[in-house]
Length: 187
Image 1 (cartoon, helix red, strand yellow):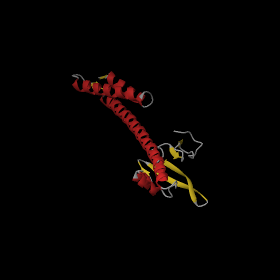
Image 2: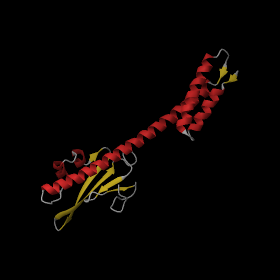
Image 3: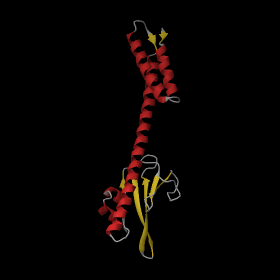
Image 4: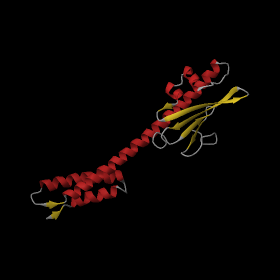
């Protein structure tokens, strides 16, 4: 009884896909594994390697599945971060509208910005995997400034970076574990 070489190739590529070039080697482990199992099944003489080819297939599918999952997660995080930035820009425009409509008076609470067109989910504090906080800055009993922060609700899952908005419209980004402030890089 002989051992099918395609089965060995599928198994080897499946193992290699766990470490090197997962997309490419995983894909070929799957193709060659299916070819091997098909040729073993159609063969008139007994050939070994059906289980080895199956292991190569499983490793290939696992590798490709993990690549797809990681890619989806990265795209999800990028989408949430983009939404958080758009929401912060909307907050800035909402504050500017509020200032115009209220003789230069800053909003005291976040909910006042809903009348200025800011998304109700942002004003409520949560949107697309980010939590939003509005902090009015007071001096002598009057609100003279504000600070808005967008922070991932599940760091590393719903977003990576924390963003903060200054009254001049500048948005800063802090990496995980860093405090967001005006010294962080501008977006």
